[in-house]
Image 1 (cartoon, rainbow, N blue to C red):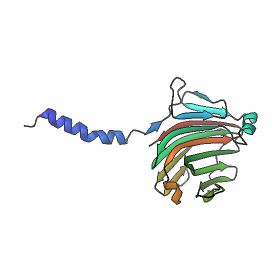
Image 2 (tube, helix red, strand yellow):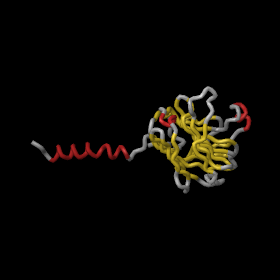
Image 3 (cartoon, rainbow, N blue to C red):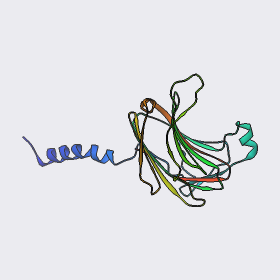
Image 4 (cartoon, rainbow, N blue to C red):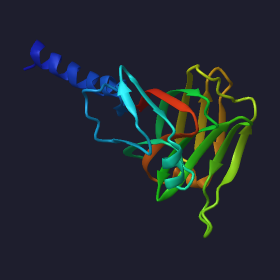
Length: 197
């Protein structure tokens, strides 16, 4: 015998995956009072408050870390996922987004010459190769730019601000991922709206 209660239970179970699909796998609120175990803000004095993480490069730390600027890592294993965030540079020479696994998997670097998308084929010298160059993809000082990186097997689609998205392919993009990071060199960088789905 079926009852209205039984149908209500079935209905709620059927809807639960839909509700879960709308929830991000991870989201950083950048609240000063909330500990985020996945986050590692390094190589600088990061200020985290009111939904934003901000850091100014310290030249002594830059030299100490072999010409690497401040970086914020997120330890979050994924295979296929969509990464979203927004950045606001002030006097930065470059801003870098990287997905890592057993070494680097995917990266793009935005600087004064635009944006360069990279792959990391297995090589003894660990050098990367370019899979796309977008000279028109520039960051504007003191303005927020939203970025979305969607990884689907060997394919990655990147949306950068208001520009048309691009899709790149490389076999190594399908590798398992252990973390991702946002970093920069010189100046001050603010980061917000970090989420993974």
